Image 1 (cartoon, one colour):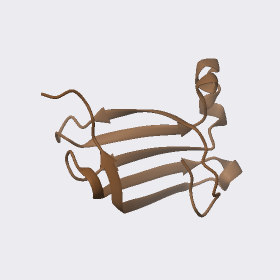
Image 2: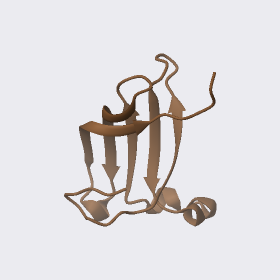
Image 3: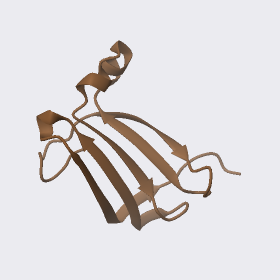
Image 4: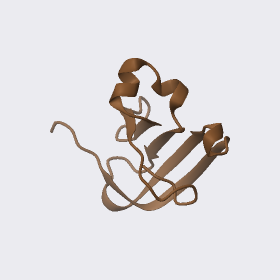
Length: 99
């Protein structure tokens, strides 16, 4: 993951996703900048340069033309603070078992 205004180099992220309990087909992915070894050592929370949540705004959207709400918090190494954006024309691919 990377941020155009901060750096053009991608950084590794660790995360998980959950489905909304109130609206079917809406998923939130939570990511932290870091690696699996940092997660296993328990240092990822203290060392992450940023943490973000990404939420699709259209249930079960597929392909180009979707919107994703992005909310991030940045460490002091990246200037601190928070940022938010509605990313339009995003590519979303919801996968999982067929029902």
